[in-house]
Length: 80
Image 1 (cartoon, rainbow, N blue to C red):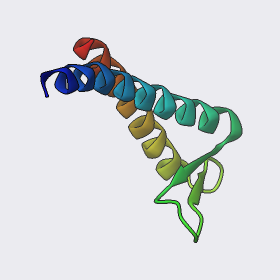
Image 2 (cartoon, rainbow, N blue to C red):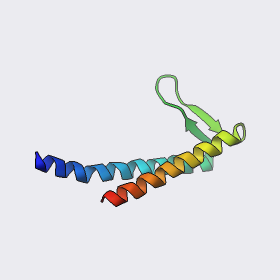
Image 3 (cartoon, rainbow, N blue to C red):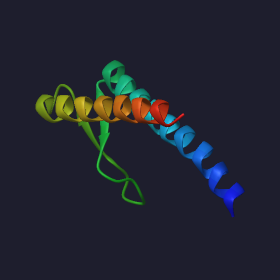
Image 4 (tube, helix red, strand yellow):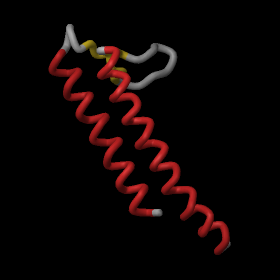
């Protein structure tokens, strides 16, 4: 049981780091393409925010994605 907990303590920071990198990649892709996904995915697809059509929503979502990415990177690095 103790060995399993030690493995989980090594895997958790890596998963958090991967999540942080993914969120930063989503934000960067939105910066270059001008659209960011918003809402949940699934069968209905995701809603996209366009920089030209919804600038306020786009920039709010961009800041949220980038901030979450940085927070996850810092927290994951702290746990390592």
